[in-house]
Length: 124
Image (cartoon, rainbow, N blue to C red):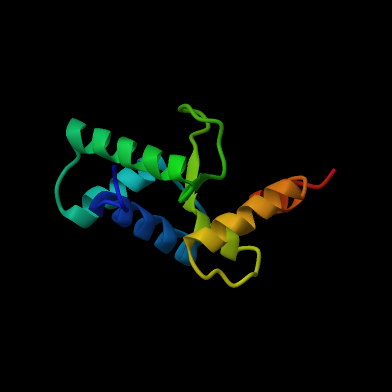
């Protein structure tokens, strides 16, 4: 049983946080792969792609990374951001991951209207 994030998971969260702070947008998996390969200074291979996929899936399962756009697949890939970045976009002060998860859960319970505004969907 794991007791925290691994090195690759921490690196993924740092990349996603930095992308949101600098560009104010979530990243696709392909963009994440490119940044990670550049940061590590070595080319991608099948093993690193598999490790990235597994680490990202576990972060999504834990609720530390959110899929905040896309439908999946080549035409409309998922877009990922950290739960802290997503929650901070509401204008609230985020203390830690648990607090950010609570903010996002409250937004979801509020009918999803706040989520739609953050995703850029027009109001009906």
